[in-house]
Image (cartoon, rainbow, N blue to C red; front, side):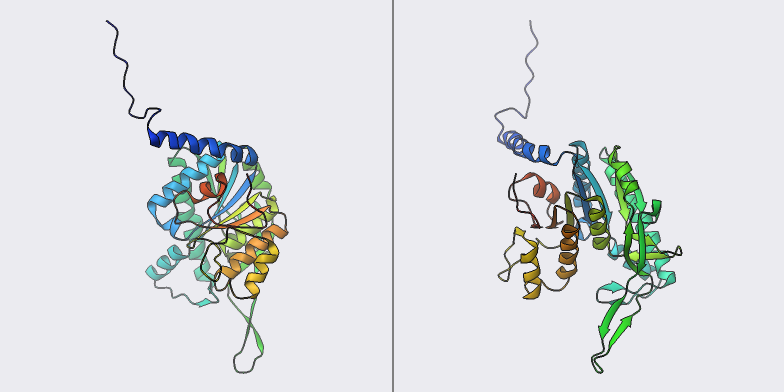
Length: 310
């Protein structure tokens, strides 16, 4: 007597399995298109603070690596830094959204970014089967920084004044050699936005800015900025799926793009001008947002500098 044929719960007639097969089939042209490409992903905001979204992000990054794409992760950590400074009873002040960073504060910033946050992302990637290595911009002379200078007009005298933000910097030079080495390996680089000045001083740098500069230095195919909004919205609050550089500049001039979206848009535009094929602003609160953006026709956010096509 022969043994009965085992019954599988996920059979070919199960609609959910059919949907998954259809999704994989749709993704194939995109996988072929992006094989060997470099994607720089700025990871932060709500996506990094939510445990389930963090696991989804780790799986997505590992999947990209396994299908032949070279992901580079640059992470932020403002809320975590704020909590640590509060715990240590160190008061923070902000100017135009930037944390004024004195010598004591920059040590804490580096500890949190290059330490606990960086290693937690590395661990998350490795827990789902990937290989990751944590870096800061100080490693391998990856990010050489200079002091960030901002001007502000005095409301009474109307005289422009130079603001001293302490050890807040901006990239002056990117050395992509260390990242290019990892592109030829199984490792995914995870980078904390810390840079070293010409005299070895440590600078805290905005993560969007670091991601944009690294993407440009690598001539990346895509720069992704994960945010807490759907993307760029028009004046009726509808998502704009694609913008040319001219469109983006026009929307900034007429006030459609305003507030905290302006520096993100400037980062995206600058990256495209310096060789990135397309920059994308997308909502990191959506599970698998990066995969939806990459492997579907409609995408998931706003792409700047390139029209959507399979």
